[in-house]
Amino acid sequence: MESVILQIAARHMRPLLVILSLVVLYRGHNEPGGGFIGGLMLGAAYILFAMGFGVQKTQKSIPVSPVILTGIGLLLALASGLIAVLMGHVFMTGEWTTLFSGTSFELKLGTPLLFDLGVYFTVAGMLMLVMFSIMEE
Amino acid sequence: MLVLPILLPLFFMVVLIFTRRWLAFQQIFSLLATVILTFFSAMLLIDVQQNGIATMQVGSWIAPYGITLVADLLSAIMLVTVAFIGVVIMIYSPGFIDKGRQSAGYYPLAFGLLMGVNGAFITGDIFNLYVWYEVMLTSSFVLIALGGSAEQLRGSIKYVTINFVASIFFVAAIGILYGLTGTLNMADLAYKLRTIDHIPYINSALMLFFIAFSIKSALFPFFFWLPASYHTPPIPITALFAGTLTKVGIYTMFRFYSLFIVENLVFWKTFIIVIAGLTMTIGVLMAASQYDIRKILSFHIISQVGYMVMGLGIFTVGGIAGAIYFTIHNMLSKTNTFLAGGLVYQRSGSYDLKHLGGLYKASPLLALLFFIPAMSLAGIPPLPGFFGKFFLIKGGFEAGDYVITGVAILVGLFTLFSMVKIWNEAYWKKEPENIKHGRVSRRAIAATSLLALAVILLGLFAGPVSQITLEAANQVVFPEMYINAVLGR
Image (cartoon, rainbow over all chains, first blue to last red; front, side, top):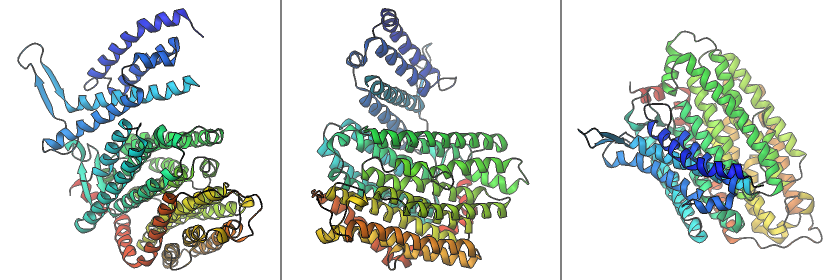
């Protein structure tokens, strides 16, 4: 079943949802949000696209397959914990660094964000993996 | 060091996800990975035995605020046993599971399962425990449905639904507990329960936990999902589930009972012993009426979980030590009988006892490989099943729980009956006409032999092993060591 309305909506909603998911991911450490909810939104963006255009076309439009995306996510989560070990601290200890300090673009980055990014990819990958295989049936 | 039982499977899983197109690599790598995991788990066991309970505050957040990882002897023993079962399954799988399922993500999922199981064994935080349960269950959901045959999907729907119900109970109990006490760190909670005079509604929360874990470990009256789903996936997956999943539920019950049951002791003891008796009796009786090898063995899982819970109900050092020894024996022997059942299937193309026969004459090796774990389960000396039951029954008599001990002895006889039934039908009776003569995979035979050897060794070295289980039981019965190790007092 092809619906023009759904297709147009999906095409325009997808980039917006992806950006929104990134915003939710970034604000997660101190405010409501985070990798899990952001990942769900990222997954939802592509599922909406798949509802409009079919699974095959959607999968072609994603640079990596959902399985690989999950793998990347797990790898990032693993790395975020190991960075602390390399710095001589206990596994998963938060390590922080400040970029552009002193300027108005001051940016505090740390391993919790990296971990959240891992969760973000893992959740999105798993969600797409499950939904795509159900939708293909 | 302590985080390795979780980190290693995660790392292996990531590698396997990226290399999922190269099946030959996956097979070798998985085997190597489980060997490495077993090695580090064994190192941990030695470390814990020599230096006492190991703890680690993840992310440098001090207990009770952060997540603590704790390994006492019980955890370490379980870790080693599970990792060893992993090795056996990884030798067996390439010889049994079809290529389609293998390359559909069997190997990464198996490590996901191991990660969840290991995490549940070493976490010291109740919410974190819930997360590991979910990791384990998510992997098992996919594993049980992997390949998607109609029978598997029927089984997996039951499996998934009942496990979600259990998870709801679990989370509800966590919420109530947190509301009541303001902490979810197990040691901190145990300390509070021992110092604060009386916390209202604490028994409601504990009962919800008990329901959740009794669903997951298939206790009476929540066992029905297990025989309805376990026989559907290929046998290595069933064997992996049988050796690990229900035992995580049992482990958690041990941990919770030891740490959190400080009030209404008489009620809990009676309650758990009654449940144990009913579980073992009903499991064994229902097994007697089955004709599918996998179903008979599935019902026996239930019956034998009853023995472990019986040890918990007795709750003396002797009873708990017996239960721990019995759990190790059961994880090995049960997995072994399932794998031997798989060999029968490869040889004759069926699990149905009515369509089997003559295997003893046709292949004495196959018969021997079933005979060892089956007699072990039935409790024939010098196999470990005998010692497991012996320790439990001795513990029961010493504690004065005569009724449950009597039931346990009687159930042992019925177990022997079921094992003899499989033996008579599949191996002893005359070979039926038009039976299939399939090839049995060498890898599968090697894996089953390795596990059978481990079963025999566990029986022969019952003395030294029971020394370790006694020490482990000591830590369970007197949780002060655990509490002090975590809270650093």
